[in-house]
Image (cartoon, rainbow, N blue to C red):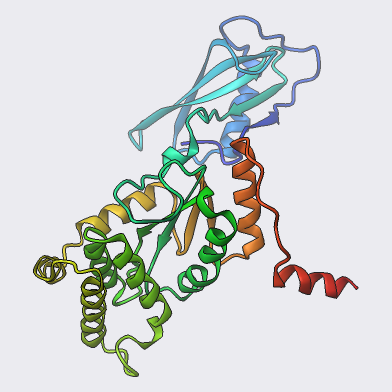
Length: 316
């Protein structure tokens, strides 16, 4: 249980004690300060019925002039209890809640991508772009067609593009497509990307005009076999994988995405920084440029996009 009013760093809330009154430097709060803290918490937190509160000052706080305060709550009716970690000003005038985040780790390491096919630069490319992709998603298809080729064209070996499968329950053949392409990924990155390109390009055509699922699945299998033959993949091995339709890797990717806060497709991470949806090329260029600058590199010159030229003409 936590305060409703949480900020990314901290929120300072006025308790309402007049300046100079109820000085609080001991291990315990005065009854007046306790009452004010309790009144504030009960207005901000949805406690269970008949919850009792108690307070303990536990040491120096992270903010100058503040002490750590533990607010213990317990409800006999609901059988629940817990503690809320707070900070309280030494003069008892303000209350704060601090959220600390560890940002020491390289953000590129927060998005697993091992074993996945990649486009663009090698494993040591300064910018890692990981996309959570649904092959039946029209917005994913547009991003795939317009954005990622432009990224590789501009940044060359400076970016590495990786896809994680993220098939939606609302797309009937998305899971089948993810399994088929992942079967290819084990045999040939080239075949994987060729299948992804074709499936995204022709997504509206699978299943015919009546969108029959069985027909769509069969067409997806044929696409996978065709791409496998192009790279001379072992057809028996590929067929066994496709026939099995093992969704274990896809479910693992879905679980990973959920832990990372992925709720829609497309969702893309640029060196760990997430953005959602089918966004403009300029927006992503800005993100990649910032990621390069963070690595101490100078981004390549940017040519005017159609979007920029249209905006400038509008200003004129």
